[in-house]
Length: 90
Length: 122
Image (cartoon, rainbow over all chains, first blue to last red; front, side, top):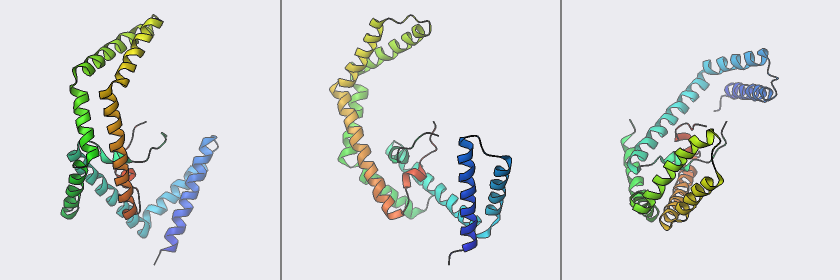
């Protein structure tokens, strides 16, 4: 059963973060905006469901990175580095 | 430490990748590129000229003739059949590996390479 409160909190945080990022583009982000994002981040990381979710995500990413190192060492080149989608810088 | 089952699956994947024609051809082409005396000479000449010209450029003393000379060396290297084979085999191998990644992603439901790659530097 999805945790509706966790989902709401996560989308509120993402929305606030996007707003600040957009405002930063034209130097329009205020201290108040940053404070709001920070507060939401704190709430996010103290929410039990989201805390577990982020932890699981971190564990998965670490395991995949480790797996890539294992494979890349044997292949002689960085498999994930070579095959990841090309992304823009910054 | 990765799970033993995952390690075995990874070993199998590595075996399939290394025994593929695309990787074998790339390894052969790379070996030829690194060991060919003519290619080595052109690359050495290119590097030493580039270093020399870089110093000259900062003092504004680089002539058109010198620019043409380094461009010609670069073109000779790029058009050399061994370089062409090396570049083409690398491209073919990359395409094959991207297909592998796409197949993995379909099963996982997310991009393995994008998640597992080391952070890129701009």
